[in-house]
Image (cartoon, rainbow, N blue to C red; front, side, top):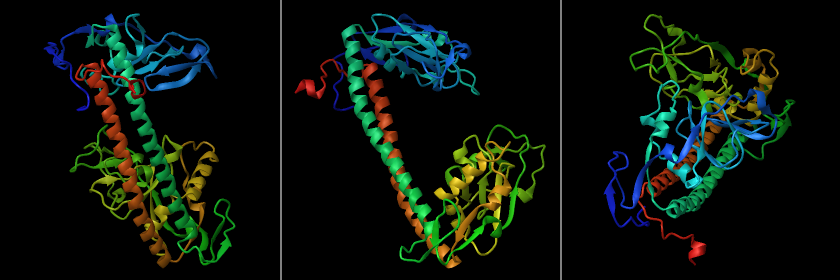
Length: 430
């Protein structure tokens, strides 16, 4: 914030989280800037198109009529309570979301920026499902300029600066998407076509797989498996196990093809663990079920793990014969071809929504190179993934830093830490 100047004089606000505020600013509660209104049930007015219906998680359907048509700041009542929304078109809110009727002397976008600085964690109740009361929201104290013009100028300044930040975030997110696409292409090509572009090819006879290297064998997964087992899912405590406790792995432990030992629930003391289901380094795990189709069939190789973690009944452990490198198989299951197999198996399995059956996995066909070639492919893909993952991590970090800057800029402007009264957009200042 060093490139922005401070206000000439400050005074003690008397409010702990505000600290000092500009001398010409005043304290005001939210209820004196807007009326907070409850949302309503939407079922009788739901439609295929029309006005957006918004809950605390955002828009999720449409309504044939609207609850309010003027610009408004939407505040979460239950669920996602810490992400105010701004809307300037007719809308409907459900009972998990408040909307505001903003007073005429308050610029709507300015109120939105103010609302993003509310310390929701000090007020939200019920840790299982956070909620905010009208009373706490209405009594929340802000400091604002006396001048309507200055309040509006703060909103215009933030709109301009945030638009620049959002454009940078969008570019980084586009880069992340491109890197992930290229990473996927590298994996898919290596495990289905090999590393030698000049090798003779043959028709695999398998839809979606196409041609494969002539020396590769086309076979079903059942021919390389010794065992495909799943564990048990007892009623567990709603917390991760400590290091000295037994835990049951959740399906999220293999999301995005990476093993995460923290994705577990503690096995209660009164239940005896089944040691035969303990996961160990070198295991290959697959998600059998998930709330997201994109995560079903996700496979992760366990490079290392703490002890006392058990398979659940929603995770398969695959044990192979000596003709296949386990990491090759893990990479193979990330390929576009295998992901297509998984999705087709899910959509075609009656009564098996969001699950994949053992029989489907066993019947998947693929092309298998020699063990020597598998090892070369694994080494190559591993090196490439290190590069791609580093680039993706750097881009993700850049997005996080940009978001932090945006949050800090909003806070500095609406709490008076910086003075933007003389600010002009570069075009206007030129």
